[in-house]
Image 1 (spheres, rainbow over the protein chains, first blue to last red):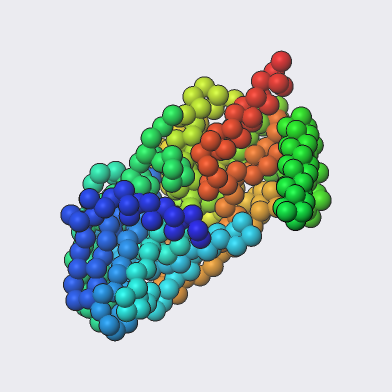
Image 2: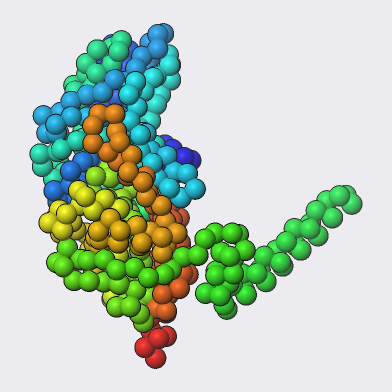
Length: 163
Length: 208
Ligand SMILES: [Cu+2]
């Protein structure tokens, strides 16, 4: 759990300039750096990630979303237990306490696009709408990256540059 | 002061013991890993299996004899860890260059029901062409999992459809089909590269 978290923190730092241009808000909710992982040819699903901050004084809840490029979006939780990876649906979505930030990041929570109508290619982007219990709907745009850092795969420190 | 000195002494003792251990494990990498595995109670890894490539070629532990290889389990309906592993292996193999020709890389689907040969062959075009997807019948898949002491289980999702719980690590196998260790995608890139280089060297040793 600690590594994906670290990666997100790093991504947050490195992308801080880009993030200002890649931030969406509605009501009390702020969405930062929504990105989706590149997919393999004809992959039947895609993983998408983002950070949500609740700037309000009431709890809110990410309920789900939709995108024109996939049949639907589900909220999933990954866990790794004794070397076994498990993915479960979060039927009630993800709660964001007042003032809190939640991270959807590799190895943890993700949005899963079911049945994308195209291969997700690095550098492309696509629109989506997220639905919140209190703040309503927010239109956002996912950028497509190879990793959380947007560079080559690998651990946080080395991603993005090759020896 | 006395406490501090004792502490230093303990640290140095630990350094010597650890250093000695590392030295031994570098000299006898295979046997050491094997012994550790048994000692920690981890089940035996390595055994017979037989699966098909998307093109219909049969690959089994016999046909791999004499070549080191890498095995990992996954499925194409996996959005997170499986594509990450495949993309990462692709990058690592690019870094290794011709060294990556010295071992086989096998991606075994735990979801033969949805991962048809056609689906797999299309999916694999996005990764290093030296990575081979393998698929078997339900029984063949089950037997392969058993041979690697790996786990996979079909789990229905409330929204319809299903997902697969599965062992996520990457198995590193010696030319004689014995297990030499795991590679975790969270390890530093250099560690992963060194593990793969070591695997490549095993191939060269066998040839020479
Ligand atoms: Cu998912």
